[in-house]
Image 1: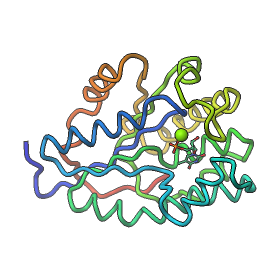
Image 2: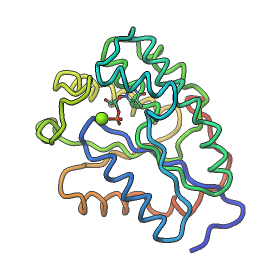
Image 3: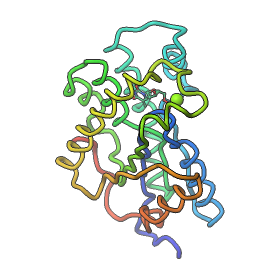
Image 4: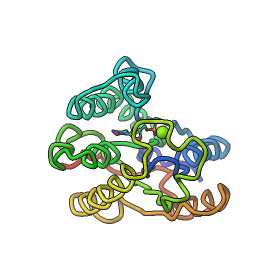
Length: 218
Ligand code: TMP
Ligand code: MG
């Protein structure tokens, strides 16, 4: 099926705790869309390649220390520096698939004890995802995966606190933007099983969407 000339690309975000299989699924989805002849682009957050991203990377690898508020704002600034390119691509009919977004920003910082509302504010009016897929995996499974524990937030207590905050983020998305924008997905099983589950849930949104790009939390 071809994309109608009036539609724009869809903005699809994948969210979840660390080692839930997000990055694997995001890259498989982008590969599939490209094989099917669609224009798609992967946008990873944090984008560690920019100047701000390098500061975030050093923090996550515990090579630098930073005040909780300051690192929170850097994560948000890292999204803002990518926002214009995301909008431009969507308007040109490219599907943008993001590996994490502002929802991780709130959940992880609030889990450290920052006020929820403080965490939400800096991302206000960023491009609004058309769809967010929230992958869930029991903590024992995520903790058992290789590499768990490599980065700063990968401790069981931090992940459990973040899981609680993600539930509040989901409520907020549904309250402000409606329940069609947030889909929770059971991320257990093989890579292929999860890929099929995601494919079924995404449906035809990757064929393009009509209407303007919304603004987050507005
Ligand atoms: P990554 O493993 O997907 O690269 O993400 C690195 C870590 O950064 C992960 O533990 C989630 C966390 N994070 C935040 O704390 N705030 C944010 O805004 C984002 C995008 C990620
Ligand atoms: Mg990671």
